[in-house]
Length: 83
Image (tube, rainbow, N blue to C red; front, side, top):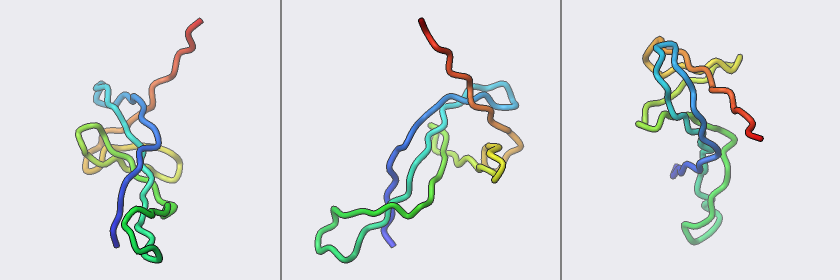
């Protein structure tokens, strides 16, 4: 199955290691084979998260985020409103 990723959002998060990371959320798309061209893609209903450097981020059911393969837990930075 051919897959593509479409960027949904990106945000800053601070790791339990004290480092600031850019996290990007992507929607997985699959090619719709019922069309003759390669330009029709449909959402699969799955999302994936990655760091800006390409490493995967695991998201647990409770929303906790960890850098895959590590013990680093990520906490999204609070957005501050500007007046």
